[in-house]
Image (tube, rainbow, N blue to C red; front, side):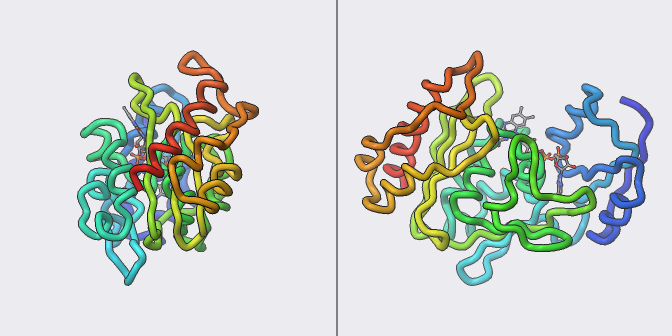
Length: 264
Ligand SMILES: Cc1cc2nc3c(=O)[nH]c(=O)nc-3n(C[C@H](O)[C@H](O)[C@H](O)COP(=O)(O)OP(=O)(O)OC[C@H]3O[C@@H](n4cnc5c(N)ncnc54)[C@H](O)[C@@H]3O)c2cc1C
């Protein structure tokens, strides 16, 4: 490590002010990605802004049929929350399948989507249910938020404050886990909700999370695991690496989509 200034932000405005004036300042949530990156000298912020003590940044509430999840809420809290279980059980089971207990008790939903790892679980879940990302500046639909590998619509001085998810009619997430990293080799979320029938895929795209038109059309016509079987999933534009070829991932997308529909 190297010398840096640690700040405990008291408010969102406080965090934004340090982000704006600081020395390559970075927000710190659970540190599950950021601290590892700093240890490897891949990031070297001069100012580190801890957002976990900001009032309202953690915790979950229900506003009618909409879940409002604070950005610094941990995966374990999402997995165990009764409002999430009632309004969107898909999210609870997705969160319960992230990493291991240590990661789930420190990692946060805001940190996960700000990082937008191409194999992370939340991007698929939130894209499928057409979630809204609320920041210090604006409300960003999930369709406009995830913007390629490790890239989002966030500006340098923008803080995610909460995530809003409207209860879908049905939704489920199926993940084929990469056993070494615990991330998704392929993860598919299917949802039938406010945004219509949507299918989002993580772990497979060479440009990060994406929606699959063919699976969406098949499920809009008939919501059944059998409907998925006839869909051709092309391997063009899919990742190919030591863990699996593009063709293997294409097959997994169809298999995981079928499992998700069966579980919904
Ligand atoms: C061993 C291991 C296994 C894992 N397995 C999985 C897995 O199976 N599935 C999965 O999806 N993820 C997995 N993760 C990632 C984990 O879920 C964390 O959520 C993710 O690493 C982000 O960490 P964090 O929330 O602690 O954020 P941090 O590491 O603190 O921050 C990450 C980035 O987000 C920025 N940031 C944080 N909060 C905000 C905010 N509110 N607004 C704007 N920017 C913000 C930070 O500045 C930083 O750039 C794993 C991680 C580890 C270490």
